[in-house]
Image (cartoon, rainbow, N blue to C red; front, top):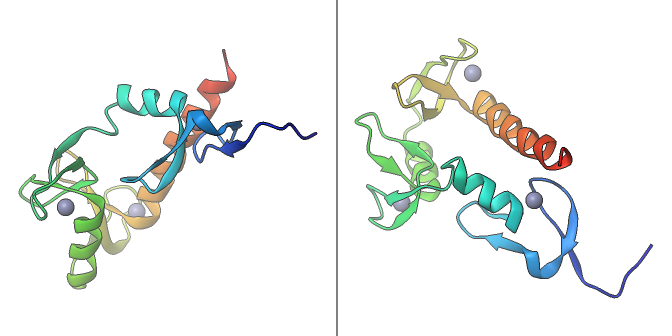
Length: 131
Ligand SMILES: [Zn+2]
Ligand SMILES: [Zn+2]
Ligand SMILES: [Zn+2]
């Protein structure tokens, strides 16, 4: 089935929606529909703070060891630089590079972090199906 109206697929709820309601989110590098965006905002996933490295106001992606906010770009840069930074993940217990730190300072490895992101995306997806 095809309609004349241009549609875009939201990367979170994976629904095809009118292009005008789905926007490219620069910080997250994803296409996000208005509905998902407001949900993310409500959950404070997009809370902006001044990044300690680039000094720009951006969503907090991770925190440094001394709890300073880091944006996704600077975080990735730091991580690439710091190859020695392996710790036992607080989720799976494997010795791996620290993908991010929880608010309580516990390290989380990249696979577990990704799992967490998927969980959030799925939760939002499930929520948007139950209306
Ligand atoms: Zn969506
Ligand atoms: Zn930054
Ligand atoms: Zn892990």
